[in-house]
Length: 540
Ligand code: ADP
Image (tube, rainbow, N blue to C red; front, side, top):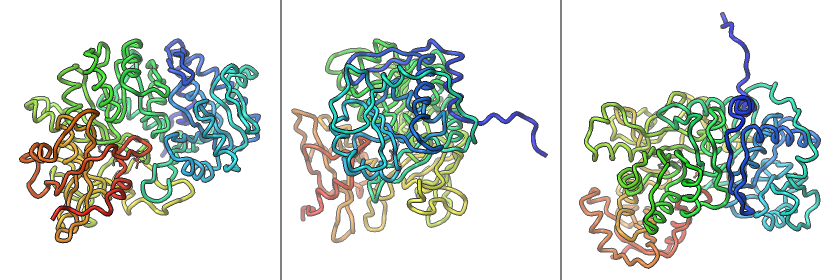
């Protein structure tokens, strides 16, 4: 027997309809790439998204066609998402930090037909669009006065398009499993692979991310997503914030400490989210200018392991609660978030810090499993193995079936991370499976060593790679980038690590380089780093 409740398809257009009806004046503030701060609100975003839908309907696209965006976080970019998704198109976010040939590969693979772009990417588009036959037109997210010069055919001005359209447009009315967003994983090995989100998965992920132990944001909050919209859906913020009517502050292209601080203060932001490198820049700025954080209450940090120094500085010096989160493009992206259980709240400060540095617990809608030698490992907080995940907002296959079958017999996706889970459900990443160091058959976690090494004064970035060793197969090599104008010695670093990690985990050498290579999402690119050191030999 089936239940007798209404069919109400879980499609994302309903989110912005809801925001328009209930929070129409709540602001969307954007730092534009042209310079000025632009102010809009949910009512305007709703109306302008509908106008864009009408224009898109006149462009000879089919249901499910892909339109791409190459843009920083902004109100206009948000309108492209809702304008396309509302009429059953798939919005494909392009990461502008990728190399030109990677972008060409992705655009061709996705068969993008229109590209919405910030004007700052005009030189890049001039170079790559002639090599992307599927692209019929480019729309610059700007007004007439700021339109770039171009040699390309079919280039449009966003504000001009909207001027000529009306905002009467029927959205939705299709199956909630319809595709609505496409995002490629950075593919440090092999070609990038597309993750194809559905309306339903985005809505369920938003509900989940709004729960109190995840983001817990509400209509009175002011949210600054520093995490880009092209990085796994802004971690869902572009869907979850309008669901509850939170004000959104968009940083545009400027993610340095001073620019982020300015927005945090002038817009009275109380919740924000980004990768650790962004927070290192902000904290360095605060220290060097001796300023306070006057409205910020909570920060979600994920995408890479949370260093203890960032956690302690935010919480002890600035009174800001830190929530460590783990996820990936394939998981929409939130997989776990770390908040304290009532038992943990009774613990000592140091014990709490140890918990908060873990990646956290699974919210409802996420199931985790640790797999070792094809068996589920016990949740004892020490046995580590491959981290597997399943749920309604987790990928079941890549776009165009790249990579073939990706689920195990129980429907779990292998994350490529190595982790343990403790009896309270806290998951801790110990490595990516391809970065784990196998020394004499035993595993050494590169992340643990990096997190401690970053605590040495003067160290900007620490990276550990497994390097060939004639006796042990692999041994850890620690590579350090120091802060500008700082000198740090190998002895200082090894002395600092001594006693904080097991003796046999001690790196066999420390090497200093000017710049540790970072990937397109700001994380350490270990493939490039290993390549840099391929001819290196450990001291005899
Ligand atoms: P990629 O970097 O491969 O493109 P994502 O941006 O989706 O993919 O990043 C996902 C990966 O980032 C995870 O599989 C994990 O290795 C790493 N990651 C994300 N959050 C954390 C975290 N809090 N701690 C450690 N690693 C993390």
